[in-house]
Length: 320
Image (tube, rainbow, N blue to C red; front, side):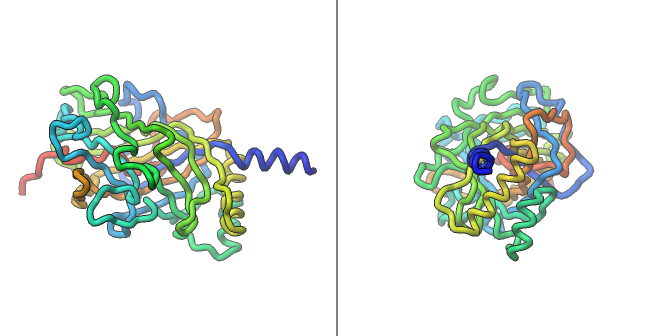
C-alpha cells in the first residue's frame, strides 16, 4: 500500500494536461482542414473545465505590439485576402498587459462550468467552493519584461507565420523562452497547478468581406505537462490533488484551444510604448489521452483563449 501511494504521488506531481477555449454555441465552426502549415490539432474530451473572462471584469487576454512602426515587434502587415493592417506581435493574459494605468488583474479567466472531472467537482461541492474562485492565467512571469511573453519571434513569412494574398487563412506560431513564461490554475489569488510550456498555434479566417462580422480566430497548444505547486495550504493542496487525479484518470494530457467569432475589438490599451486590445478569454481545461486522435474540425463547444489571434487593427472600418 505504501508503494502504491508513493507511485501515485509521483504521477500526481508531474503529469500532462490539455487546455481548451470554449465559447457560446454559434452556427459557425472553424475548419481545421484549412490549416496547411500547422500539424497540431485540438483533441476532443469529456473532461472539461470551462472558463470565461471579460475585459469589464478585469480579465481576458491582451494582444499588443510596439507602437514604433519600424521595430521588429510592431507586427507584420497582414497580406491575406480581406485582411488589413498589422498582426499582433505579442499575446499575454490580462494580468500581463502592458497597459497604463496598470490593470492589477490577477488572472485571465474564471471557472464557470464543469464537465466530467469527478474528483475535482466533488471536492468543490463538498467544501462549498464557488466555481469562480478557480482561475486560469498565462503570460510572462511577473518579474519579466512585457516582451518576454509569447511572440512571433523573427516575424518571418514562411517561418513564424504563413499567409498569401489569394487566401483568407493566416497561420501563426507564437513562441517564448519557457523560463520566461507561465500558465497556471489558481484558487483565489494562489497559484495551485503549474502548466508546462507549449508554443501557441494561431489561425484567423478573414472571411468573405473586410468586416469583422465574418471573421473567426482559433488558437491552441500542444499537450502540456502539469504539476502541483509546493507549499500550499490544506484546502489548496487538496484541490490541486483532486484536479491532478482527474487528469491522470482521464488520459494524462491537456491542450489549449480557442475559437472566437465576431471578436470585440473595442477595448484598446496603450502603455509602455505598446498598443493593443483586451479581449474576452473563454477557456476550457480539457483532459485528453496521449492516444487520442485530433478531430479535423472541432465543434465550437470545445473551443478556447480567444486568444491570441485577434485582429489587432487588422480590419477595415465598416461603413456607417
